Amino acid sequence: MLETAAFYADGLAEELIGRVVARVGRERLFIVTKLLPYSLANEDSAIKAVQASLRRLRTNYVDLLLVYGIHEILPIQHQIRILEMLAEMGYTRYIGVGSYRVKDLKEAIESVRKYSIVVNQVVYNVFNKRIERDMLPFSIKNNILVQACRPLDGGSVVRHPLLIKIANNYKKTPAQIALNFLISRPNVAAIVKSEQKNHVLEIGGAMGWRLNISDIELLESL
Image (cartoon, rainbow, N blue to C red; front, top):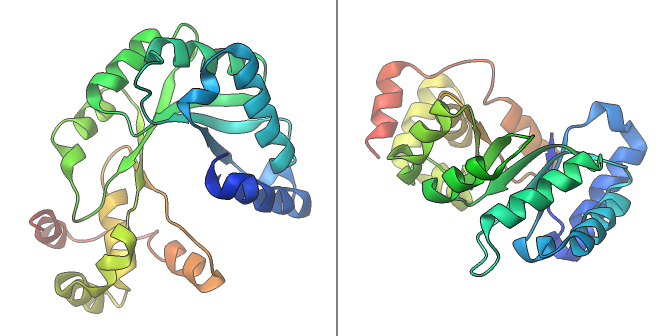
């Protein structure tokens, strides 16, 4: 999975992923991109925005298209209707949202006609567990995947004494411990910024094993 957005570096991030698409082939990738709400102001602006993203990505569709953030004026119901239109036109296979609160997510779910909201992308890490109060239980109940943004809290997890101690016990890195904690939760996947090959390999090392319950409980206390 490659996750990006039309507004990352004014489209340059999508262009970089487009080079990957050209090199490795579209069928090997699950591509996620995001639009800001104002792009969905009307049908024409939405089509132009998604077509521009697709040109940069060198593909004729994405696997998942998100609207990211809340617009003060543009109703959620309108945005979801436009997202569904883009899916109907074949520009995306699935639709979702980002940075939605529970009340926003409820409204989005109630607004869909044919498609389902499959993802909500929100901040979640071992230091910031606010979504566990209501968003995570609501997402589990409604079978919505939580994509955890800032899962390493900007890198601060690597310096925390508890994460370092637990990592030494497992012969893992603190980042791998922090990521494994998140993906041990139901309906949670982590989105990690990755700029270097060794970082990608480290991220991969967070999978294929599970923290002990006692260590999960320690991390829950943070």
